Image (cartoon, rainbow, N blue to C red; front, side, top):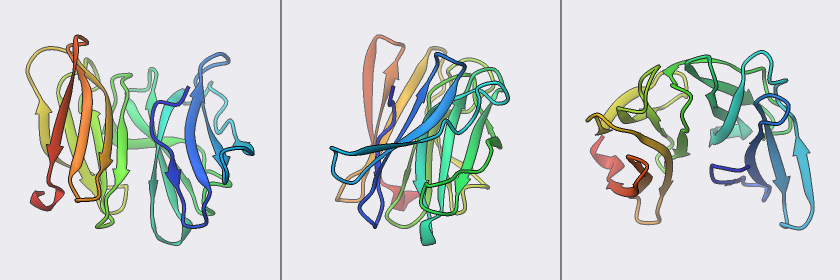
Length: 186
């Protein structure tokens, strides 16, 4: 199942971050140029060391990519790096960011920064925060979207042509909330 959006690279390839749960939590990437012919890269983990699903891909100069994933029991957001435009990926390692077995999403902003929406806690699904990074390693929480008791989960984030950031997420698992942010203000 693909939870997060595909990323189109400068060479025209479309990378669709995906995962499966039937032989442990495993991430892979489905790649196409024409939406007719497909290649699968992965699985990128064996589902036994670090269990990851629902990857999101961030882009950097010179074909570098970063994959961030939800983890099952590890209580952190996992990351993998590609130095060759997604053809190969490093082993998954922990980031400094917590994860309570909850979905995340991220986007590379037009100004080159990375933006992540995640539950900034090792347990529960509140608070829901936005963090930014210049290098994918050091993250600064810039906005709290929700901090009241409840469940705020399964975020999705994009940046529209006008530069604004649009975030949707489940609100108490009863409705969907849509938030618009100006990244020039953080």
